[in-house]
Every structure is written in structure tokens, then in C-alpha cells.
Image 1 (cartoon, helix red, strand yellow):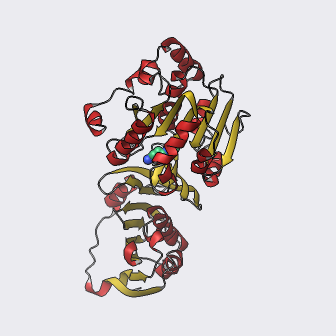
Image 2: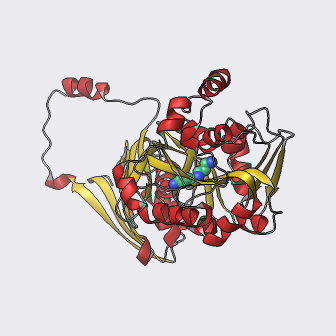
Image 3: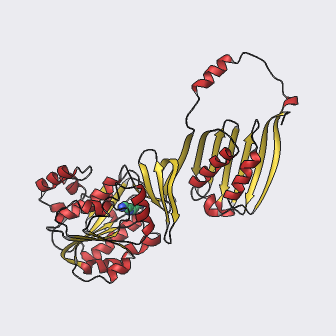
Length: 426
Ligand code: SPD
């Protein structure tokens, strides 16, 4: 090393776990970890996930940089370990080999900046030092890591701090609690954002209160899904409610939210709540007819365990379990992100409840792709939610409970349908 400015190890990691190779958060964590393990001082990390797969990133260290480009479909990572000074980059190499589960690997080591070939200029460095001090980031290195919820054509990215509070592969999905800079901690299932600390109230107030104020006297409520607890928290704000049954298929979702999102999961101890960790689709198949005033389907997107929550047979069973004046509300996807799922759900509900009995409520969630989202209704009785007359009662409730999204204007306004949505639903 004495006759060179730097040392560069070019590494080929092969036979790596493809899931790890596509996981931007764990790659960033491991690259930072590899630098720290070798005693480097981390200045900054910037990582990016590509659609549909692949991760690129660089960790800038006081001693130069570590960089990576992955091809998950080949189980391959190209890694550069460029160091100067006393740092031993082979420590980083060993660390990454193990973390990536590489079955084969090769490496070429090169000296960079052969001193005998360079000419040194001696001049006054003091002004350069002063300038450099302005750029120093003494306490913390900066991170630039993005979590992306996407389909093939569109995405919503949130910069996250790199903190991973929970990461468990349940029998149904990957359950994670990550931390975003703008929206606080967030629950993600597989690679989709479900809810965040800072905007969860948009979703949970809108899935609950419009139906609760449309139904004349809701007492017996069924929630299917909703494992983070935000929906039952809102329902239980209504004092007339006698019983809420919640059926969530994945106990890991409940566990992670109780531990890390306690303000959302705040009603799980309420004595009016019966909490079942079970399959909601089987539950409603066996439920007694004419039982519930309101059924809320707070499911995730129509892939994985929530796929059956978009089927005709599921909604027929819901219809049968509702009382004569019952109301169904379902997480209805986005008319701008997944138009097909949005429209098909509405056709299903129109077919079961009646053409004019399947209104759509639109609202905004900044952390979902496109920001425009929907709840879709099935009205078994005669009162349509846009026709409510309980304006003063609603606004008194909103004030008393300190709600932050829902009010009587939003109640009515959310059922107004833009023309492009009308066209989609024809
Ligand atoms: N793409 C997100 C779809 C919404 C899923 N439900 C969120 C659960 C919040 N309780």
C-alpha cells in the first residue's frame, strides 16, 4: 500500500439469494455494515431500487467508497470496495459474502494511484481545509434510501431512514415496520405501504365514519382484515356500538403494530372487541345470515392473502350476513393506479346489491401510489350515504373526538364522482 494511494477490490458475488439481491433496505444495511465492520467512517449512503428488479447503491466513507449493482434474476452482485489508508477491505468482502449468501465469488485486487507515476504539487492547503470543514457532517452520516410501492408503470417512493423495526416473513406475507422521514413509522406488507403514523387518519376515518353515520343505529360490526387496528379504533369511538368482531388472517400484522404503532393499534384491549386471528373468507362463509349492521373489509391489495377479498362469492356471503338495512364497505383500490381492480369490484357490488346501491367514496392518501384511493359500498337498505341529513350531529362528533380528515362536507363530497370514474364504472 505504501506506493499507492488506494486499493480497489472488484468483486463478483454469484449464486446469491435473489430475494436479498432485490431488497434495497437490507442491501443498504449490509453495505453500511460492511464498511463499519472494517472500521470505516460512513459519510453517506444512497441506494435505489429499479423496476422490476435490481438495486444500485454507494456508501461514501471517509476512506473512499463501497458500491454495488445487483441482478436478482441472476443471483449476482457486482461490488466495488475502494479504500485508502489502513482499512482492510477484505473484512468488508467476508461480511458481504456471508450476508448475501454467495455460493461462488471471485475478486481482483488493484492498487490505484501508483505514487511513482504521479507528480505531487506542494501548495498552501489551509483555505481548502476551511472550505472542507463547512461540508463536514459530524454526528450522523446521511442516508438516501427509498421505499417504492409500484406496479410496472407507476410508483410512489418514500425516503426512509434505514431503520427497520420489524421484519418477519409470516406464512402469508413479509411484514415490516420501517421508518420514513416524512410520515414516521410505516407498516408494509410485501412491498406495499399499508399505513403510516402521519397519514393513517385519512384512511381510518374514511373507512369508518361515513358508514357509521349513514346507518341509523349501528350496533354489531364485523371488520375483516384491519390488522393494524386503526379501523376498530375509529369504530369504537361511537358509543352506541355494542360489539365489534375483527377477523385478521395474519397474527404478525397485529403483533408488529401493537409493538411499534401503538397509536394505531390502540383499541385492541377494548372489551367490546372480539379479536380473531383467522381467515376472514372462511369466517364469512360460515357466518349466520342477517347478523351485522355494518361489515368493513379492510384488506390489502388483490395479490397474496387478500385476493379472495375481491371475489363475487365473498361479497355474496357478506350480503347474506348483513341485516336488511346493513352496509358493506370495502377497501376499493385506486381508479388511477389499478383501474381494473377498482372497476371490477364495483361491478361485483352492483351485481349483488343493485346498480344504484354500490356508491364509491374517493379520498386522499399521500402514501399510496397516485394518492387517490377509494372505499366501495354495498347498501342493502335504502339510505345512500350521500343523502345523510345528520350534519350537526356529525360535526359535533368530529369536534368531540378531534377527527382530522372526516367532517360532514367531506362525507358528502367524497361520494361525488369525477367523470373519468363514471366512465370507468359504466
Ligand atoms: N395499497 C394499499 C391498500 C390499502 C390496504 N389497507 C390498509 C390497511 C389499513 N388499515
